[in-house]
Image 1 (cartoon, rainbow, N blue to C red):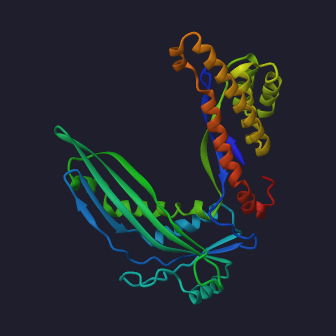
Image 2 (cartoon, helix red, strand yellow):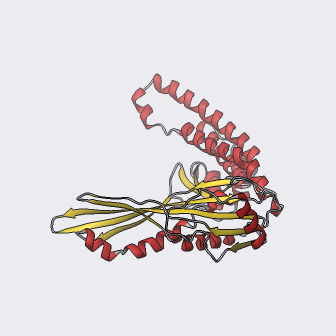
Image 3 (cartoon, rainbow, N blue to C red):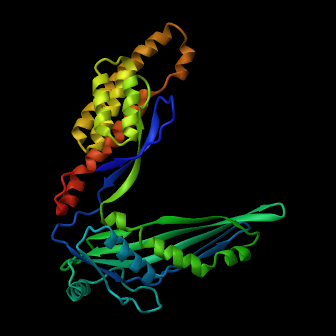
Length: 349
């Protein structure tokens, strides 16, 4: 399952285009898992602090209530499960360090029954590493703040002695170009409370991609220029009329020569990938690779008898088409898993 948006420049041999691909989660949940409970089991974890002339670095505990609530909302927004229920009370109430790494089997069984859910997702930790940076320029200074969040989440099913899945997530937030010459001024411009609140909320979105199939943006090489048929096809692609573009390429490919034939075949491969016909896309990609390899060998031999230095100016079409094929192979390798995970919707991927 993929979608694509393209912007072209005139007289461009190739262009890099973004393609949105559905990526499987880290675990396959049976279709019978319909109701999910979210609980806050986060305890305290040790912190640290280090300060130099230009960097102030330290770690703090995030706000687990905010992170757990955001996690519940983010999972519910994906509409993958029928219902998402959040437990409105924290399981950890002590200010001391968390005594046990995971929920015990009896606790999981009790919570699953109490919330009437098939699956339990527990926020176990939320740590934030904060880094404030200052760059002095003459009489002023420019500063920025990085916050890296580390949410730890466990997935439990009743009856098991250990978690079904442990997620140690991490991601970053950035606040750049804050005008300040001192750490005190930087803390005033972006308070610790505001930073923790925003980072804790962001942290709740991080584990979702490990639990639910999600969209990721990848790049592909596309050939919009060349013969009139190629330019016509590029116009149809901009109009999102892929079938009409395909008609142009399939008509042009048998008459094209050399590297132009390889480029047309590569575009046809991309067409089939957009249609999620990955086997046909693979076949056309292999054809494009072989055509590009043959064209490169022929051109190399010609240049050996003329001007070897001009080889540096040759477009490396084989490498570009090989890149497309490698990315396609990654999609093919995860497609079976994705199909299993999406079977609950009876989707024909």
